[in-house]
Length: 139
Image 1 (cartoon, rainbow, N blue to C red):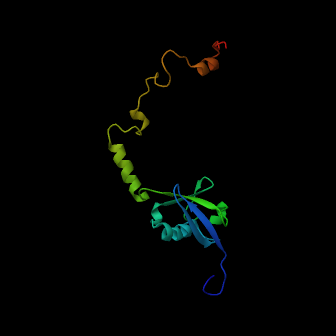
Image 2 (image 1 turned 90 degrees about the horizontal axis):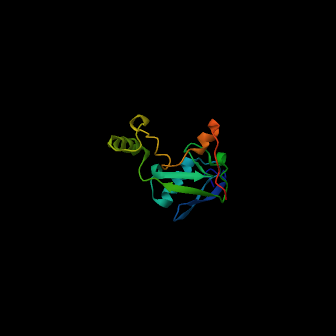
Image 3 (image 1 turned 180 degrees about the vertical axis):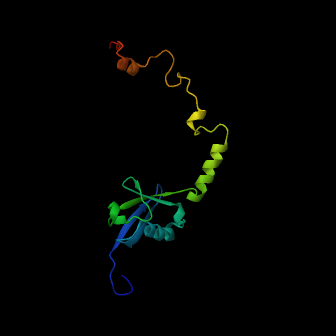
């Protein structure tokens, strides 16, 4: 109930992690950011570390819960991030500075042609596309 006598319908949600379930009540017209703020009092984690997922989609802070179809009694999944998004670019820059980083640009990688398949095998799909005859093994 609001202080001015106006009733605000509330919805009770179950917020699930892999190990814990939290019960949180928020107004029906709440945003994801408001849900995260309410959740911080229960799970003692800062808002920046909270990532909420519903129906396979990551919920953005400005979105209304109702726009994603979140209703009273439903479950929303919570993932706690290890670091804040402000630290991510620094971590990416640090990993790209390493000389043997595998996630570097394509110009630094070379393909020798035989890494995609074991030696002694042919590319059946390429043969079919080129019109070459292929014999299938008898069973």
